[in-house]
Amino acid sequence: MRPAAEDIRLLVLPGDPLPEADAVVLAGHVLNYLPDEHAIGQALTAIARALRPGGLFAVDICDLASGRPGATPRPPPRPAMTGRSSPGSRCRHPAGSCARSLLSSAGDGSWRRDDETHHNVLTGAARVPALLAAEGVQVTMTSASGAEQLPTGLRVLIGRRAA
Image (cartoon, rainbow, N blue to C red):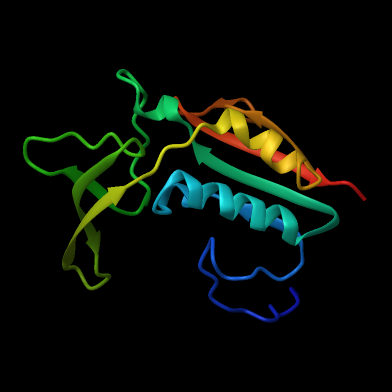
């Protein structure tokens, strides 16, 4: 049996104060949806400051290399949905922006169409380890998850605050 979650609340980075945490894990390059590179840096700093001694930091982020010609497009973000690029464009998510129509099953035999546009801010991920080290969090950066090589420009930062 899992313990019940406590103190669930909506937090919007970079402005909302974060509670102390034993671990912060962000997947899906959520920080790249912030309005600019400065906001991404502020959010990373806030996350690092929220970690308790020994706390775990695990974040993925889209590097500037995501926007280079020939970068590997990411697969659709929701495996249960089928993504179709808007006419005349090819979704190169996460680099820059893209528009797509997604079809999903409504569960009753019918289908629902949702249109979405992604706008992603790319950041120089190479600067992040030094930014976090200044906050007492040591991270390593990789472009793989275990044996799986990630798409071009997607970086994973894993680390801890000293105990």
